Image (cartoon, rainbow, N blue to C red; front, side, top):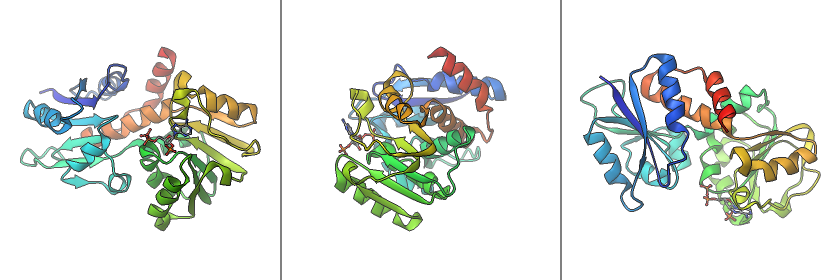
Length: 275
Ligand code: ATR
């Protein structure tokens, strides 16, 4: 029987997740259907209940429902608990038909780390700067810190949010937070997790941010990310956008649902060609 999965968001029409998961299913021979569903802004829980009542087994969750999805879970992974948000829901585990618990995970951070590994960016011992202190950044800090950087600095327009976020993760390593004006390089890796690029803005940053051979990563992909990445390339950093992170987080969700790891390389390449 075909198992049903979906991605919930609002809006959701431009989501690439159906194409990615359909490619994973074809590649692994898993019999699944994956669609995009617009959930009403005031009733995400109702949309999830309706989907599972009709046989839905699991879902991805995107803007603006990740925190609400977190609240409806019965069981959370450690990384989801620390993120305070969930992008992967699973009804029951290990195919147990009597298990109706809702399991929640967040795969964004592991997706980011795997994409950096794919591009051979060393994380162990690296000096990392993360720009932004919103939900997108909170969601990736646990796997980034677990990779063992020498230091992780969070810089944000609202300094107090960066300070609070650093305090929440201080048990995991050398992490600090502050405003953009407190940033002093050099860094081996600078990750843009602000939504500034959407408005064509660039956080105010010093020119001497990058160490020799540094990488600049934008968690967004495509044209929106070019403001930060163009600025970084002009200062000698190697630019990477978030397309690989999108594919890798999807692969980790797929693994949570089906216990099979798809080969992400052909899916990355097809998606890049389609942009
Ligand atoms: P997301 O879920 O994408 O993280 P969010 O929680 O609203 O969304 O966080 C947006 C992040 O982008 C915040 O760090 C925000 O800075 P503030 O905390 O000071 O609001 C940052 N951001 C948004 N627009 C920005 C801009 N034009 N310049 C710099 N930072 C910006």
